[in-house]
Image (cartoon, rainbow, N blue to C red; front, side, top):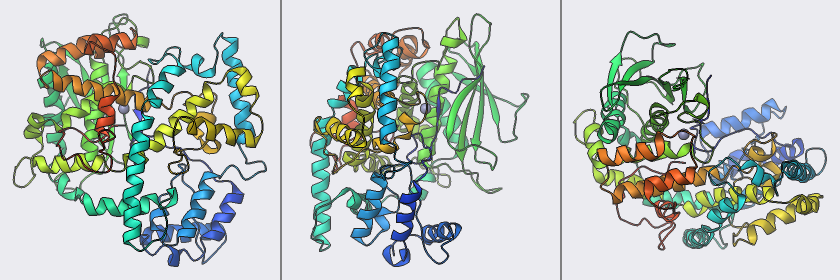
Length: 555
Ligand SMILES: [Zn+2]
């Protein structure tokens, strides 16, 4: 059977599952009214944005006007382009309250009901809360563990947010503005600061990354250096599209480990994003070796042109192959516990770790060569990319942490606690209290999704409920493991074999904490993740200046 456990979309930002939330018609009407005269209000919007707004209005029977559809997140992509501050505020507040307009599309009473019913269902299974029930086979095991881990980040986050806000206020004052930054202003000014400080020509970066070199001299080479694997291109195997290539994968002892299918390019009939899965699972019971595929959506170069890859896609390639390694190293009797068949708060860990080799100096030297000059990518360029990745994390990361905390707070409620939350006002009060008592400034950095439109956790029987923290959790494991590799000599066969023996050959057959301890010799630590995001030591918006040679943030 086919597993899609390791699925992820790679739209931007590429690691959050995207889904549409339809806008309340009443909200939409207000928005439509708001956006008449858009052309004057957002002179910095691209012609494509303005055309799209005109087209949407026309579809709604308002020829000659403009309309903006809300995106599923709290922040709206057009906000930075809106010149008029009052308009920014209106759009932002409509986003925050999109399903709090009263009437049949107000979701708040439903949320209270869902939370209560989940707590009751969990109680039938002997659990104190839905979170406790949902986490029973996850790595974190208990809501308190996930909550504690995120709560520990709050002081560093709050301090970073204050620093970032101060910097944006300077920019506002320098432009003659007489106000303090609010969330509806945030990206307008953050984008300006970013453009000033981290100007990066992504097309120039791409010139160092050709697809075949990235795969064979980068991704495969790293797997060879770390694990002793060898790869041989096959031309005799059936493929489902002419763009798909296949390789035999040979283990460190020369035996055949499995077969790898690589399907890198966009095409009209293909689903967006990037993912890994198995055609055949490893299983001793069935005597099967893994057949694994990686799918990406890299724009295909025109016929006869050199196929270049963006830096983001380079990371995605390493990421997806990290899942593939997890599948190839499977060493299990049962397919149901084999390879990537692991908990949601674990499965993205090995794939993220593999991203670290994308910018490891000896790997870069082997594959990141300019397509015309053959020159290796300059270390300063990689350092610049890394510094840019630390920018604005107080907000970018803060809104995600707030959403993950909100999810877990809702699902850590007992039946009695949940029963006390009934009305729309109760839901609002709970949300605010849940975040503020942790020290988060929700008016400055609201959660990426407020409860009333938190589709991931409320739109299906379980969905991502009590699970949104998984992205942060696996990032913690990833960053802490990178630190272990760096502290222990980096890219060596001994380190690769140790990591393989303790973690990525184990599938879902062991307690995940035990796996991590066998690997690192200790419990996971959140500090390396905070450092990687520039949230420690007064870093934040200021680049630390120290070139950390590793990939820009995974999830
Ligand atoms: Zn992944």
